[in-house]
Length: 300
Image 1 (cartoon, rainbow, N blue to C red):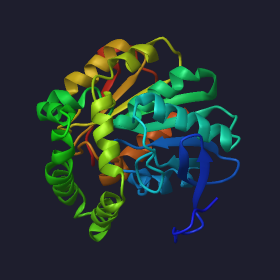
Image 2: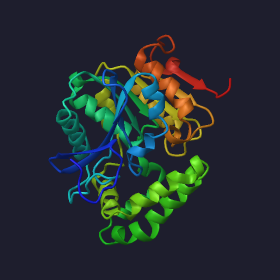
Image 3: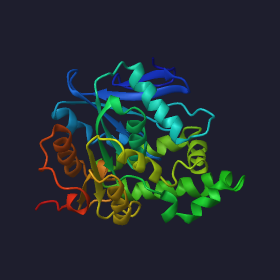
Image 4: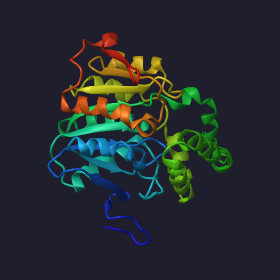
């Protein structure tokens, strides 16, 4: 299903789910292991554009949807809760008839959503990578509470939040592929409904404390890899330690000279770690807790 007004290549697909149209892309061999890629709060599925070629070359079949309110997916007038996104992802897998156990890689908020999805349907998933996993965005951004104030939040979104996001993306993305991702991000901001969706995510708690999902993940048995950029200003080392204390079977890898957007800025460093983990050919199993932590320094 391709809605009118979308002049997109054939690799872009749409499916109607219960809350609206969901845009997604599938790449890789038909017989490859399915890898679901879940993006974060502000950047849609193209966040994985530079990572996908590594996975397809390794024989994985990647599925990267745009969550509601993002990219080319619909922006329904609903509360943008964890439950909304988890239901969307589960519906998408069902609509596409994907039945084999699926590997998941989630980034930032997408990592927390991936954990919730795995816990809700544990039999449908094989393993999970948490890349720069969101723990609580509001801890580092106390001003986010102002977005919860009626009318004030609606005023701040266009005059403060959106311009701030543009500045950050320009700073992070301008050196990548001649800055084309800056343009892609600006295109998303121009689509009606993105600001409303983001405001709802703040107000619904979607960007707040995620500890409950990691506590739930601790009760499951899926293999878990946690990746953190050592220069990440959003997800601290202490927050990753908190995840590791809950999910003691998780293997934690901190990647030097990378930050929060490592899946887009440093795919050459992320891909080997994720592929080795998914394929079962990574480093030997480590004991739980702090002993499972590695630090990877590029070029060494």
